[in-house]
Every structure is written in C-alpha cells, then in structure tokens.
Image (tube, rainbow, N blue to C red; front, top):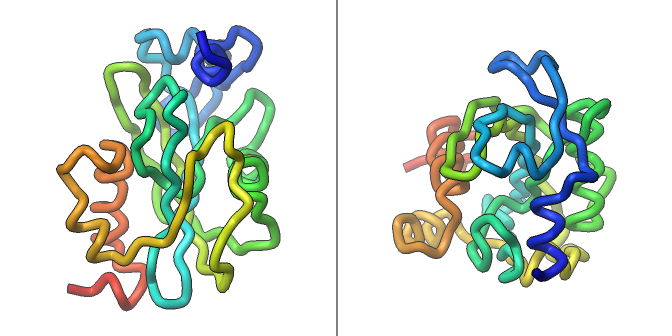
Length: 182
C-alpha cells in the first residue's frame, strides 16, 4: 500500500464530527470518516484567482485514495479535531501551496456527499498576484492557472473532480469576479 493511500485511511488523524450547522457533536479517525460511515466531517477549500480572473487548480497525486490524478480546488483539506475552520484553512494552504499572507473571503458552506464520505465544505476564495506556488509533491502532481472558459470546457469530461465541478458551478452563480459574467 502506498503512503498516500495509507494516510487516507489513517487511524492517527482525528476529525471533528459535526452537524449540518458545523457544531461539533463528536470525533472520529480519518479511516472511520472515509470508510462509508457517512459521518459528517468539516473540510476547507480555497479557490485562488489571479488578477485576470483565472483560477488555480491542482492535479491530485496519482497516489491519492480519492480522485487520483484529477484536477481539483487549489487547496482542499480536512479540519482537525480542536482546530477552527480558519486555522485549518491557513494550515492546509501553507502545507499544500506554501502560500501565506493572503486574505480569504468566505463564499459558502454546504454538505457534499460521495460514495466514500460526507463532508461539510467551507469554501473560501482569494485573489493573488503570484504566478506559481510551491506545492507539496506528495499531495499534488502539478498546478496551474486555468481560464474560466478552460474550466467550463473540461466539465463532464472526467478531467476535474466531481466535487470541484459542483463547487465551480456554485462559484459561477456567486459571480465573485467580473470575468465570471456570461
């Protein structure tokens, strides 16, 4: 079993179990949360846009347990037990992109259901003037900015994670950047 797959089924990481309003009602291991138990646990997503309105996506490591090799949100990760949403966002952004000193804006929170897990997703965005990031090669195979049109053209083709596709539609509806206008 590869290290990333083993980490995805870890008994060492403890996640809060929450209700749909985000109130902590218990705790469980990563393995319990990702084993079809339907335990609702919180995650954070950060969408990173450049000044031109392009969105940065990461290509998930081919060794990941969930959605290997697919393009996904710039930052996505679990909130640890005892950690706030904001602390989780800061930690995940630093770990995955080596990115600090940004201003996150909360967009929305929602429940995402998949065959493997059930997550309360807290979605944020930021705008940066950076052109590249120091991503973690254990988590990410590559990363780059995509135009909104490129993302729209990739939807439904098995290139992007289903979670990202769903969330991207929500972001388009929010019209946070002028380039997203039809």
